[in-house]
Length: 297
Image 1 (cartoon, rainbow, N blue to C red):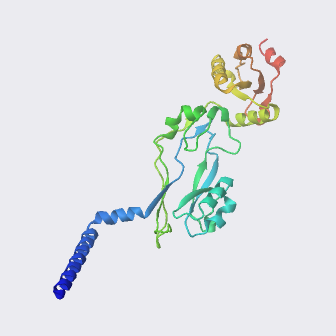
Image 2: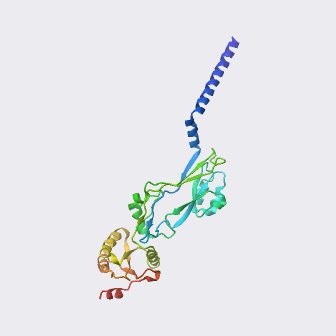
Image 3: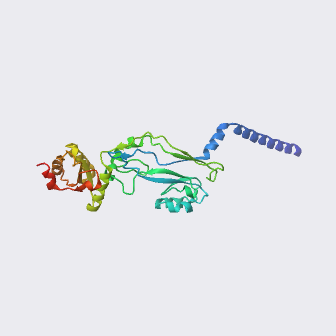
């Protein structure tokens, strides 16, 4: 009787073992499982979304003037020590918080760190340290969407589909690169568009530099003397949203006299602070009311 029981137990164990083997065979024979397993080991990281830039009347860029870099931080490669000096305060904090991370991540750094043995990818910095036309262009939120100024008003045009360049890593369970593999950088196609404005970058830069020295707050609007009465309309519209406190009138070296300024100053009570009489920096001079009026006599 006892022998029969032992035989039944052994038979049940053999049957269970056979079921497990069959299950493993069926699983291994299905390529879908293998593909999904491979996908689980592939980590895809996105760089900031591509976005159209702003340009001045001559096609000079007003945004994207500086370059930044994104370093690929991999677990077990001592990224905290190697990248600390190249990261800003926010990046240093992120390095500390993720020093024991189990998966790769991208970190913005101030320079190309590939010489340190770190994978690095270039990208344009949207705004420079002293941004141009900030009151007009506006700014982006943390997700890269326009929330003020022309960035918000033209967001669909500038962003397009919001495509991103990506970096794909094949990693182990510890988040490290699988031996013999390298990160794959894939640039995205961009379907957005840039926007050209009527302002001049050199004149705008000079006007903002003067404003920084002579005005505690406010906004200077640069107008073309050839604009005519449309200049008054532009000033009214910009004054409603930006609080204009001064006007720079350019192209007075030509035939245009800028007579609309009389109506502008009268209706909006906004002074003309500088005039442009040429294309060089020294041609931007303080406004002389007497000399301006004599031009009409």
